Length: 68
Image (tube, rainbow, N blue to C red; front, side, top):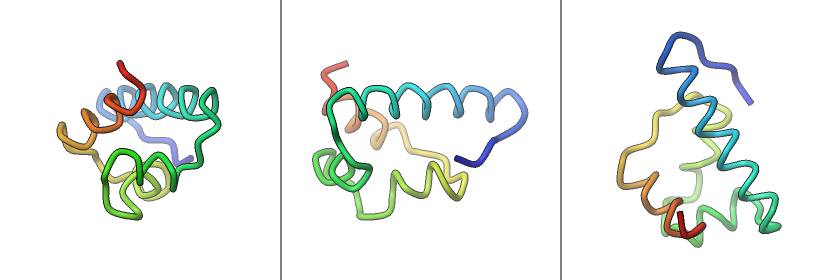
């Protein structure tokens, strides 16, 4: 996972770590989580590996998968 810097980077790293924890607890791959959340194929992968910033709607879709 690419480390992001600054306050936004710190917050994003925390969010990604929480998503990763929940994803692993449920035994989901990044691809499966993306599919369950109804997001385009590379969306979550790009958050982790390219530093893309998620939209509020995308984060909500992921939260819905985890019921949080």
